[in-house]
Length: 170
Image (cartoon, rainbow, N blue to C red; front, side):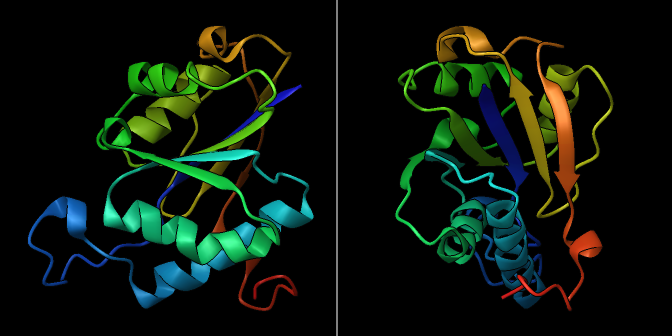
């Protein structure tokens, strides 16, 4: 079974002094939510074998805040191709993965992430900040995996549904 976590970056700071959109950091809330979502994914057994992230500061900071929840080192690949990307770029990036990788987390941005999750699952999927769409499908090579409607939407993890009092909220 192949599993894909499409994670939209956590809440970013629109009022930061960042020189570009790509450099925008997370807010305090975003930092907290990233860790809570990481703990929820770990508790549910959705621990990625590999993480592929947009090179934007807010996406990388989301992973940095989330990573400790998994309790083990996980290989991270960053790429500009996932900044402002959609299904085509996701297919291109995932298509490079070796077959032994069974669970991948891809961290990116809307509107591309929400549209990609919806296309893959064949149902509408809403992804606000720090939301993770959990998708699964039968094994195929990663180069053939990104096919609209071929994935099952298992769940969407949302920080607001986890709550501040969740024992795994860090």
